[in-house]
Length: 249
Image 1 (cartoon, one colour):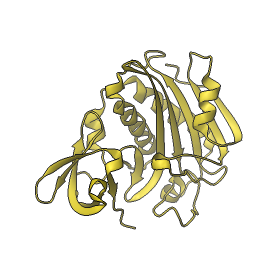
Image 2 (image 1 turned 90 degrees about the vertical axis):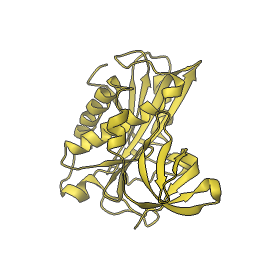
Image 3 (image 1 turned 180 degrees about the vertical axis):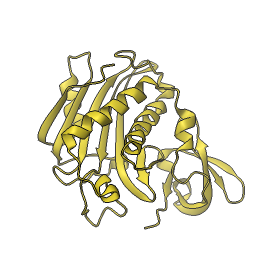
Image 4 (image 1 turned 30 degrees about the horizontal axis):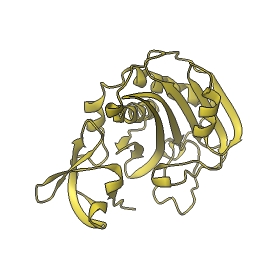
């Protein structure tokens, strides 16, 4: 895989994921689209990604598997893509003196505050993943956030530095490329860097009408299920739409 990817910078887009896919049509290579302003950024569970124009990194990378140094991957193993992307962002932040954890499945937290969200959209061909668009929104220079975001932070708030977004994006892409080359080998590392791992915390079980319970995250299954040991000792698996963290603000 090329270490230096060409990046298409756009002043304003609805969604970098959609723009990156459009830019990738007809090409066998990798495509990166970054936006100064993203007006309809998407998160998981249909949530919106809110970002002040020109303050943060909002971009999407299109990856094709089995090419450009990226291993082929079976559809059943696609959670490894989330692992690779999450660890890449955490490693990039570590290079800037910021210790981050992965809030399952693929948000990035520093202490109890969210600094990055990742949205991955996969395309399947038979039993394999043929292509992914990996959308990343990383809070970099923003210091003031709207009240509907309950627990945000940014690189600038954490370090006191201001960052040149166009200089930082290649550094983050380098981490992402290196992590994707190791696709499928990072499960133990991912589990070891989980937010709230082995810490008694409160959760909402959406399979039981939102019933609250306390437990410890013990890891993640190979297919991406969150493993939580309840206080009474029961170990239970949860899919993404079956559980919510109760974040202390």
